[in-house]
Image (cartoon, rainbow, N blue to C red; front, side, top):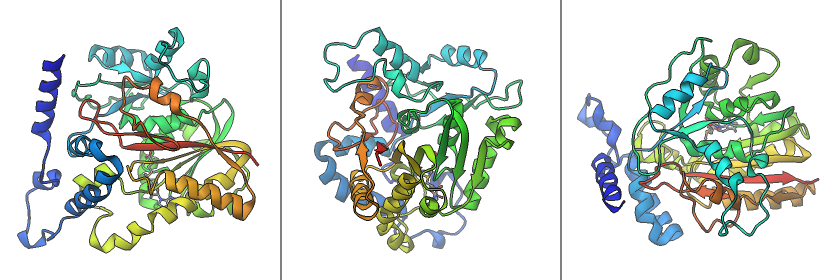
Length: 386
Ligand SMILES: C[S@@+](CC[C@H](N)C(=O)[O-])C[C@H]1O[C@@H](n2cnc3c(N)ncnc32)[C@H](O)[C@@H]1O
């Protein structure tokens, strides 16, 4: 086992680019003079080193090296394709469906060290159903081949950071739900929401029209026409902050997957990097935008309905602080009471696949690790009580 770990770490370290701008070098440079003096990727790393070394202490070096290394993917099986041969093909690669494996282990009987918090029994009842996502085991850094077109004309699986499925699982969709995906593009989580088969109708929104274009492409490639073009899926490009005024008290379930510092992306890509000097103000304003979006999502939810807030950042200023701030805002300005749901059982349920940060005050955080290089992904489930 120890030898295996050493081999995997060595293999991964070969793929690490300590200069933090790996993909830049794959393209032939046109003009040396166009090279930014301080690449945004480097500014991002400096920023993370300053803030996350304090926030995560001894854990930071291992998170850091993982963020700089190649990330792992999961293959979300497309239930709209003919999937029996896909599952056989994925199993042939030694990948396994981490969602259903976790449920069946749990239901076989949780061990004595399982959480003392009340756990939904069976655990799968509290999670959105019908999701199948294959991953390679911890320490296995194999890659999935490209998805293929099934006989029904849609692709057979969607490659995504498997941790991105956790907010959708946590939303706990029920058959017949009306669902809002407030910041939906490019659409990985929208697709997962549709895979549950629970959406009576789904509103998928994103402010950016170019990104809703990408979302439409994903829907075209994975969802049959009758579902896509009927009344069941509505794609819009509105400012999500206004949703509370547009459609208040309307939805059973709302996903608020906000714009954030996209920590992994910011260490690897110059393009569209929020650490560019010109975007400093925008970066500083992110927590405010996140609070406004989460508040709008909660206002759009029916009393008794649920919201999941998520980011792909490690920053507690963008995670717990935003949740806390929004709860206070709704109480003070709208007299709306919101309860944070306990998701600690997710840590136990999915411990074979992900590494979770052990000390989140509210919500859960998947931290990147060389043995399971998913995330970061923060998610917190809220119930609108009044
Ligand atoms: C993290 S991404 C969403 C990823 C998406 N949920 C997925 O799984 O593919 C955040 C998105 O928020 C969008 N956005 C930014 N400001 C917004 C706003 N005011 N209203 C709605 N969407 C916004 C961005 O265009 C971006 O596509």
